[in-house]
Image 1 (tube, one colour):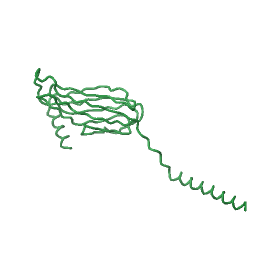
Image 2 (cartoon, one colour):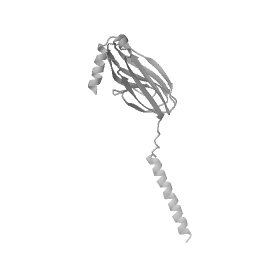
Image 3 (cartoon, helix red, strand yellow):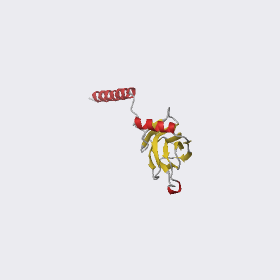
Image 4 (spheres, one colour):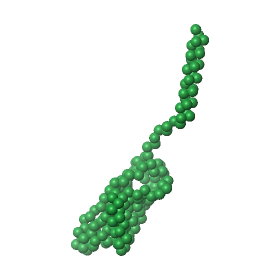
Length: 175
C-alpha cells in the first residue's frame, strides 16, 4: 500500500504539468449524495478539490473509480483526503476506491482527489482520454446513549437504599 503511494508521489514529481480543479458540491443535508469527477486528454498530475457543507453532524461514505477508455493514456488515482471543520489534520485514504469518514461536525469540508494521468492521447482517433468519477453519500451521525457517571450510580444506590430503609421501618412500625 505504501509502495503505491510512493510510486504516485514519484510520478507526480516527475510529471510536467500539474492540473487542479476546484468545484463546490453544495450543501449535503443527510441523507444526501452527489457525484464529482474530471477528464484528462493530456498527461498531467492532478489535485482536484471538491468543497461541500454539512448542516448537521454526519457520516460520509463514497468511492472513486477511473475510466481508462484511452488506447494511449492511463490514469492512476493516488489518494483521497478530507479536511475541514472539527478536524485537527486532514484524513487521508490511499485507496480511493472506497472511503468512509464518520462523525463529522457541521461545517465546511474539502475533499481532495490526487493522481496522475499519463501517456499520450492519439488525437482524433482517441478522443475520450481518461477520467475518474466519484460519489459521496452523507447520513446522519448516530449518537451513542450517554453512560452514567459513577457518582450518578452511587447516588441512585443510596436513594434506593433510603427508600428501602423507609419502607422497612414503616412495615415494622405497623406491626
